[in-house]
Image: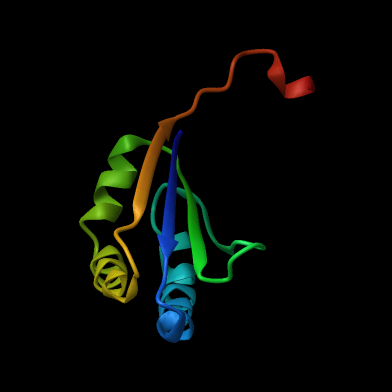
Length: 101
């Protein structure tokens, strides 16, 4: 599994526009092959600090998403940010026997 965390600092006057764009895309992205999670969150300390939390079943599914029209629209919405976003990619594995914990 691939975990993607995107941290964004949006301009306060563009907060609603960015939030609406991401919200409108979220349902379609969740339906993409291999998408296990696509969550959009806001920091409790700073409402202009936003996060996208994504889980993809394989690297291949993530790469297809990164070439999709949905991602192109999302990248275009990044013009509303106060500073460049921070993207972190993690490869996650589940050790055998951890299901009971």
